Image (tube, rainbow, N blue to C red):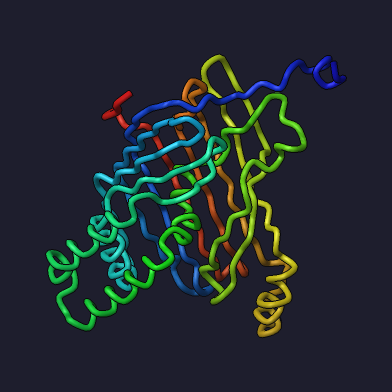
Length: 295
């Protein structure tokens, strides 16, 4: 018997992968700070989401259904972006994802159905959402370009990072091997064109009781030296008022899980990208179980 087993006992998996169907309310707040004298720009959405999980041998399949999405912003410029976001949600409201038993996304399934959804929406609803032909052509071009790398872009989406956590390998007591629970992920900068963040999520807090597991994850930026040399030094050389010490990148996620089947009871994600106090972008997501739940 090893010393660790003697002191702590066997390493025990804290979450079991199981089947479930759960309805949620997801509230997302986006905030842009652009200039010292400008009022922060905010955009909020509220959606009804159902997550279904099926465990088949050594694979997990998840169906994510967006049943309703509503949004609000006071900013006139952002209203067109919000309208586009709401329109996008109705094109393919259901996505099927295949993951391994750790929770890592392997693929987005049935992509031919997503293309069928798009072709149907384009034929029947595009003109109702975008009345001008120029707007229609721009939207078609942007959407179809996005479909080329749909799976890659899906894995970078912070909403799906929250909804499909890669944490099922967590054990107690946590050891060095499980300090980083997730594979490296990529995220495009919202503030610096062409800059991409490479990060991993690190376990920073863990609690459990008889039926639930609560944990907190923080992002660790893996390529800060690279993006500093290639992008950030140029950004800060253009101004004497700010420096690299003003830069910040954070992703913090909190979860409460049901032990029996790994179902999310609640989740919270906070993201911030900041070049300085007067130029930043942040997102806050709150996920809660809906009363309309199917167990």
